[in-house]
Structures are given as C-alpha cells and as structure tokens.
Image 1 (cartoon, helix red, strand yellow):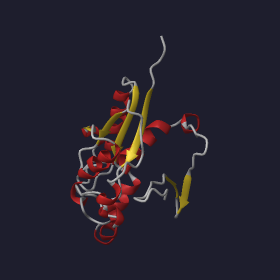
Image 2 (cartoon, rainbow, N blue to C red):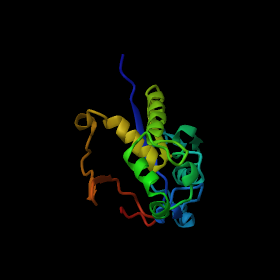
Image 3 (cartoon, rainbow, N blue to C red):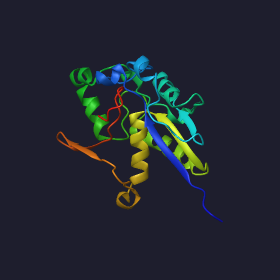
Length: 192
C-alpha cells in the first residue's frame, strides 16, 4: 500500500507595524494591505487546503492566497500575556531580567502567557494531526509558530531531515549568535 504524502507550506503573515517597531503583537492588521492585496503574492495549485491563524494579520495575508481559508486555532500566535503591545526596547529597560529569562529558558513564561515549550508542544501536536491529511496544506501563520515547526522537524537529526531544492537560498546572520533568516517578499514582490 503506497504511503500518502502530506505537503505543508508554512507561510508567514505580511509585516505589521508591531514587527517594524520590534513590539510583541496585538491583533493588528498588516502594513500597507491595500498595496499588497491587489495581487496574489504566490500562486498555489488549486488542490491545496488553505489554513490560517485567527488573528487579523494572518486572515488578511491568507486572503491574498485565496478566499477559501479556514481558521485553525492551532496556528494562533504565541500568547504573550502582559507583553502584548510592548516593545523589546521598553522591556530591556523595565523588565530586563524577565526578558533574559524568557530568551534563555524555553520553559519560562514571565509574561504570564505561553512559554516557548508550550508553543512548541502545541505546534508538534498540530503537525502530528496533519500526518493523516494527504495533499498540500498551505498554512498562514506567525514567525514563532514557524520556528516551533522547524525545531520540531529538525530535533536531534537535523542533517538528514533537511531537503535543499535547486536554487534554494539559506541566509545566516551573526549578531553575537548565528541566526537562520528566512527572507520574505516585500509588497513590490522583491525578495528581502
């Protein structure tokens, strides 16, 4: 009996003012939505299933990809608790110790919301449920959800679970620590 394949494309929502200002998000809209919504960013096969998180920014971005998006609560952003709307810079000045604890310990949730470990467990459970869903799933979600999915997939055996397609690019940045950077497309269609 042949194994049925599930293909998942995780698509990060368009940029918001909160991202631009390095703030923890609220339920804000995407930036310059009137410019980008005039045309689809990417075209996917009609046979795909389109999902998105419940937040305004994910629903708006999903509309650019099709009108048939289904909201999936598992794709919601991390619960930032008391940090919703606060800037990283402000937290560095007023609550630096809590911010550092959160950055260093995936179990920490000093903001009173969801820890990185809790987010990762939620996303792992969602991925497990998708394994029984053959076909192409396109999911519009948040940077932290995409990070959690990536960490779940590469845990412990990263080298052999990464496929590099022809002409693929990988961007790494160093600013005290090496970071993986997955470039997006700006409203004019330019890879950034």
